Image 1 (cartoon, rainbow, N blue to C red):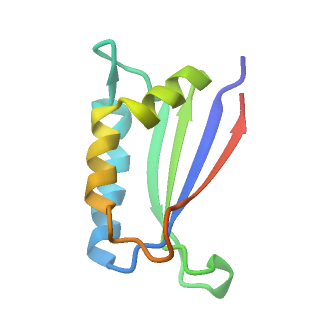
Image 2 (image 1 turned 180 degrees about the vertical axis):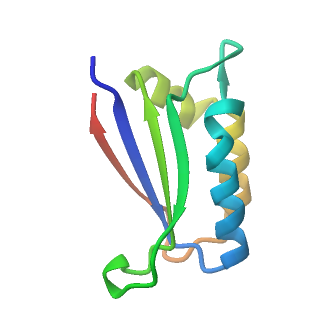
Length: 104
């Protein structure tokens, strides 16, 4: 089964918070555990270039999962992901992030 690639685009106005998000997503695949083991294949966080085509998005998170079940676990039960959500809660412009899911 092909991997599921998920891109999440955020509008984070605070550059310091963007850098914190980059750090969190850079280590996410090492600290996020399911059944006591890492389950996220790849995770990375990237700042965007200041360009009108970015439409105000300042940060992109990339996560890769082996299955839809792993992605669902990430959304509903993963403690490391919950920490990131708590860190960003109320600090985004224009509501929730844009999530794009490919593959699977």
